[in-house]
Length: 144
Image (cartoon, rainbow, N blue to C red):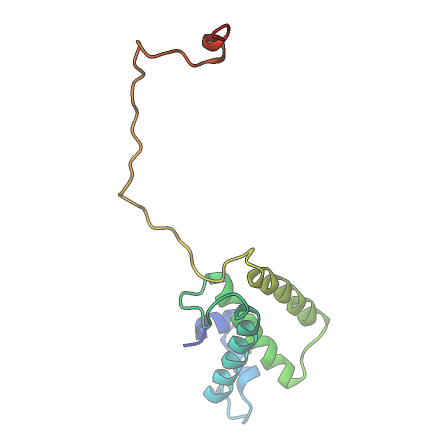
């Protein structure tokens, strides 16, 4: 299963119409499913080449950031194959590469790490025992 969904791919392309324009290689007015599948596969392979140095790929529970990068990379591949890549797209590619390097180095996580609430430990207020020894700075002064 690819990291990015069709909805995320449409969003990265700028809408369904723009995605159709990029993925309609036989000029029949509809996006070619094989082209979209190839773009998503190319994007996953590109991301995995960075992530495989530290993580087992494919990432089982990709974070929203990683899914967004996959969609953007798929759109980049589509634009590149059609000859529509300019300076802005190359700048965005460099930004994605820097972020993927951070993931590769372990400074960002590629998987969704939303913590689950634990019921094992609960905070509790304990009243101080009035007969307890004073261990403050003032209480210990002169104790030696």
